Length: 153
Image (cartoon, rainbow, N blue to C red):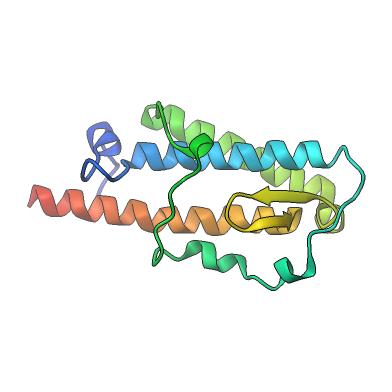
């Protein structure tokens, strides 16, 4: 398979499923939220997430076995075209990586991020969540592309 055409990028496999463009938009919205909350949390006094939350592996987020409805603020409304969407994704990812590198694990363990489904988690878990969340949606993108390929043949 070659580069993804704009038409395929924006094409939904069905009315109730997101296109690759919408998935990428969702990833950007989520990562921007995580970045913004972590930046604000770093300006406050240190906090700790509960010990029980540290026992829940973030790898669960990558599973596609359970369908989860995206919170309203993370639902894609106006996805960008392919180049702009990829640029937006890369920009927010670089900012999140820079935040992690400048603050470090020990400081990020002292901030609290309120995840809509997981509850209060620390900043390290929030960054880990981003990676597993991307893996979840990478699998979804693969599903979308398989359905498009199947429909064309």
